[in-house]
Length: 484
Image (cartoon, rainbow, N blue to C red; front, side, top):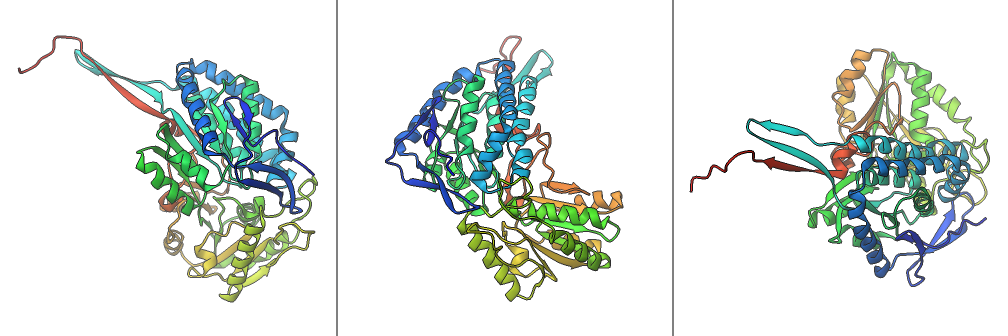
């Protein structure tokens, strides 16, 4: 099984290669097989990518927004036409089952391109009357933007970052995760086919050193990262040295609160989506499930029964509901967290080990109950299919405990009392929240976190603020009144 791309990088409208760069092996997580071999970008390739972006961006920013929009819309149409093939590549790259990649990865990327294509012509300035004089404002592109992707939703993230950047007149140099590097190259091809001028979307492969080179280059106006908190701190500091704009969408340890008047079936379904979708490798997952004591037993019974029916298997099989973790490194990390949870006294409800499926990186969907706030499982991001269920008595108690974390990415509340739902959400320290739903992230809505989970927002109208800047122009309509 092979998925070898034409070359490792895409620069100035064409594939580029330099085998002097360190080797990157792309592993199919379901079997451990090497399906492609790429090379890291050398300093010369990084320079070429940035130079082409800087050259192309000026003319692009001067292009009518509606013309930029037409290209993005054509790209969205191409993605939808080729979704079956793109989904299969995404499955090979990430190990996620086709059940997911057919509906949640490239389709979400196409939605982003379409949304920002529609938004681009509406981004306008203001006129501010001052009596005789007046001020008008312009919304201008930032310039060259760097996107640094995560390995869990590689193609979606490439679209989520490039769509607003390009719609508003910027250029982008995108570095995918070295773990899942293939999808971004397809996006670059699609953009060119849709009519995007060369240089406006470049893809360079590499590990942290390539990301650091991009984040510190003087030609870069903005860095947008999706990744872990430790990586975010490093990239944020590097960008700050050059006073660059940043968007940081980082990790989480998000609470999902289930009150005793909630629909147990709905709450269980949401908890499973918020812990087992993509084998638990979703940054916004509700991995601390707080269940009010009155329904704890019913909740755990239904959760165990429904979890036992999850079908693990070959991600390329349409019937498979859950695939492997993305890598051997991630497998070892998640199994380590499971062992720690057992040793710290959490009660195992179901799962709890590696799934016996060939040589892939499979972990059983796992649920622990009687988890306490001090346990490692309740404090650290696992990024695997491991759910922690905690008990609570009162509303005030659970709000305080839910907020007792350095993270603030997401939160959810299940209750039949919508007044309480709004009241509790209003007190939770998280940037992306749900009431009686979980992990739904339409492109129309802003997405991002607070506290250590990041700054800035992806998607929605809020993205205008993060990919443009305001120019204020004072217009004098009379003689200058000077005291000299």
